[in-house]
Image (tube, rainbow, N blue to C red; front, side, top):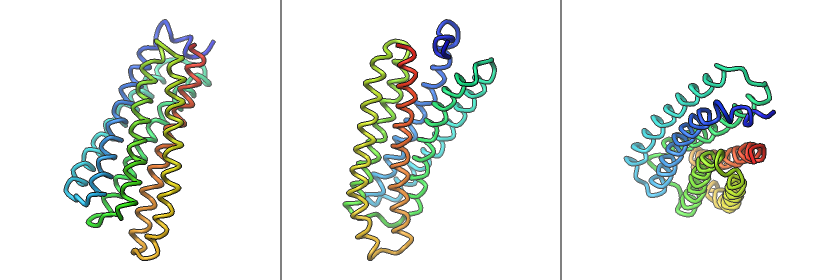
Length: 220
């Protein structure tokens, strides 16, 4: 019997409640990190710093919830494969927040300068799609117990958003190469690392979607 079937009568809602709480904080981290990129693109140093402070505090709250959730899982005896399934879900979702924090930290290092307009616009587009994907992750988790088939549809949408991020990155990379021909090496490196961190966050969103899809198939 799978983990999700076993806990349906006892612990399923508790585990999912903890996870949804964690996903909600991760969503806030990504929302603030998207604002960091938006203000960086506009050259608003004070607002970049303000939103970075929110990213830092919210990511710390997400970490606290993650630790409580993992402790909750350790408090009872699960089959190792079942525990691995939910732990992977939690840790991969947490990675999204970590990458969002990373791109925000690099944005702070970019100050007081701002990236070229085309690059800033591309970074904003990538970050906005990560935010959309995280919103769908939270929604999918909320629907797991009520409508597993809807979770499959949401997972497909998350995958599509990740593909859009890849497409934007491809075009942005062309602009970054041009920028690097004339920019200081530190700025060239930072803008590429910001872009890579956003892409990594999108990749983790797709990974979470895969885990949620697997759980939904067991629950359907």
